[in-house]
Image 1 (cartoon, chains in turn yellow, purple):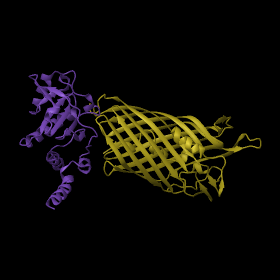
Image 2 (image 1 turned 45 degrees about the vertical axis):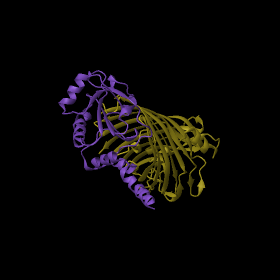
Image 3 (image 1 turned 45 degrees about the horizontal axis):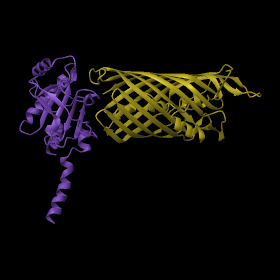
Amino acid sequence: MKHFMLALLASAVACARVQACDYCLIGQGISPLQTQTGAGLRVAQRNTLLDSVFAGDSELVNPGVKEEYWTTEASGFYNFSDRFLVLATLPVRKTEGDGELAVGPTGDPEREDITGGTRGVGDLSLLGRYTFYSRHTLDATTLMAGVFGIKLPTGSTSRRGDQGEYLDAHLQPGTGSTDLLLGISVDHALGRYAVSANLLASIAGKGETGNESHQFGNALNYDATVKYRLRPAISGASSNAFFVSLGVNGEYRDKEELGGATLPDSGGNTVYLTPGLQFQVASHWIFEATYLHAVYHDLNGIQLGENYKLSGSVTYLF
Amino acid sequence: MRMLLAAALWLIALPSLALDEASLRTQQMQRLEEPAPDFVLHDASGTGLQLAALRGRPVIVHFWATWCKPCRKELPVIQSLARRLADTDVVFLAVAIDTDVGAADIREYAASLGVTIPVYRAGDGRISDRYWSRGIPVTYLIDRDGAIAGRALGPRDWSSDSMLALIDRFLAH
């Protein structure tokens, strides 16, 4: 609870196992949820490499374990009005695990020789966003919106590794659970600046990995991003526009349960500092690139964590 | 009793006359939470025009620039709207925000597009750049009380039936 409150207050949380949360980044950084009109399609690519070991906020020596995730995410969104937007996101995940982290008798991290990976369609997320407050002045616009949705267990959770064993839950394409998503979003535009802040909570349902019940912990994703229009100085002067952004974001996640038992080495916080670039070309195309640099980890027990994530996307607005 | 009935009818009719949020949303326009800042603009002869002096009449102010491609398309449509509303008391103002183009060249450019509504250069007067800080083209509907009843950020089709219906409501208010 203390961590939860800190996360809220600091607008900064963490992500011990973000790979299982493909919808998490929807509300972070430069987002299609910021569009107010029309419809669009978006394809995003993310890469996450977990090759550091953490105990709490301390980094330990990695005994040679790493996990890597590539997520290609297709999203479609449609604004029924300037107040109501719906969005559907379907990821395709490729995962690769090289060793599994274990805790030895001395309490130090050790490597278990379990390897393998898979590729497959992940969990479908459906989201709605309703703008319940809008205030416009000559030079500023403020919007507040509620976000609600559901993540469906469309991805497989029974893929096996090189040794024939079921892959770890984090390496499976899906989570196996139906999760509820609830969030709030605030956007404020002033001249060439736009500030957005988002909180997105996911209430995890029970799923199954292989032949065991598994439940990811509830999560709270948060984001605060400032975007600045470099060109043109006056919006509308050109059909092309170039933005830079800087955000603080992350995820707090509760511990997981496997076979009814709570996993002590799961859940926690990771905070990222996220610079980004955005090009809008000819009013229809949006190209984005963001780099999420992990600046703080506070993971429960002993866990693998990532140092950075890379994300790029192309959006077409109809 | 007759007065009560009249008041009730007035209350029922009011939403259909005012530029309500639903009407504005159909055109992706916004009502602003502040009155239109006063300004003074000068025409070719140097004669000043003050917004405050137009109180009591609806005003449509369109901000544009010679380098703005969407403006080139929208200006003639604004002109057509002005022609259509010639027998009303609405005042049209086209304000160019160019800083490196002279007033004469701006008027010549507007004339080449068939624009006959009054064209002003923002730099030739006293007007806050807050009017176009969110971008151009931008058009303001300023009501008879000096309030900004609607703002259209970006180009619009001012000849569409739905937009003309909205303008009718604006003028009737």
